[in-house]
Length: 386
View 1 (cartoon, rainbow, N blue to C red):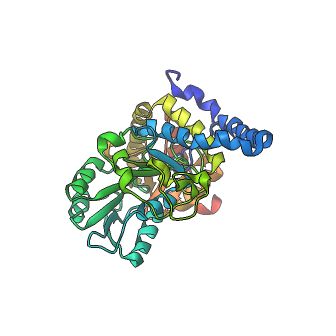
View 2 (view 1 turned 30 degrees about the vertical axis):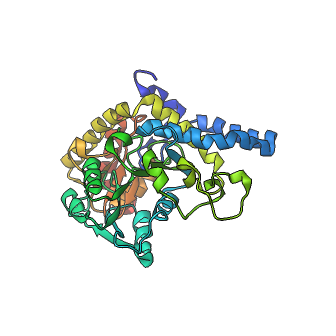
View 3 (view 1 turned 90 degrees about the vertical axis):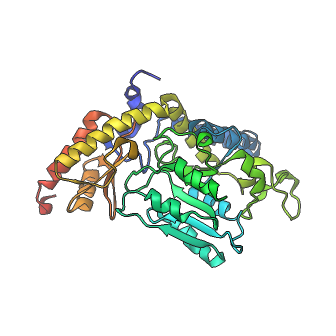
């Protein structure tokens, strides 16, 4: 990798036509993805069913690439469609009819997580949502107090999607393990933006996806499970690839595959493996430590300028407490966000939070300044003239 990773900006087509500050939602597509998808299509066209001989090994190969980004041992990451499906698979490993039936999360989780767990109450799960005080961060003291001897699982965000607030994961893992509970960490907004090591943290399970900071496109979710925990977990949400001998086409009951493959489920989404692979390559080449250093400096620049201009910053001000994006709010912010996008300053807006701005490694300081200047210009323009 070049000394300045921005030298590779021209390898991301959208950067040539816009100020792209939305990698917390959809990372910019590398031009290499065109070739990767053609490679997939050529294999299908030229080899037909024989292409499975190259496609199936990719599930493990791409999973291990992701594992290198998060410090996971080889063979402990499963690729799949999305976080929702993986959370459901994890939940299917538990019996909610006993005394240890409590699931702890927060009220600032991404909606898919909250929707899913609230529905598990019908199966006997006691779902406890810890309330945020300010809508920005998960209150650590309240979270730790909610984890007790009846807790089976803590399902919590590493970085809050609306505000970019970082959770003290190590403290949560310590408390959960003290009482015999497991931790399922949603690191969607952390992987590729914040350096961490799942082995060092002692995280039991982790879910996320490739669509954001990893620039790997949609349809490439992932599940990490601590290797020594795998024999204990027998998902009931299974498919033929969850079987120890999938090509034996045996009648039930299932014999769960050894290791992470028991979470494979049905037929893998092969095209997304190709797109994810390209995004992971960039992340590994640039390095998450370097990405984080650039992010801290640029998000600080955004925070300081936004505060100086009178905006509300709905993200932590302290660098160590803030992830990869900054959320700013002011009257008429949603309308301003739409005008920004129309002018090719690509951001997004979240109700109850504001405009989310996310400089990635391929962005520049000048772009950080430009996007806030454009917000000021739009706000100074009468609404009827926009």
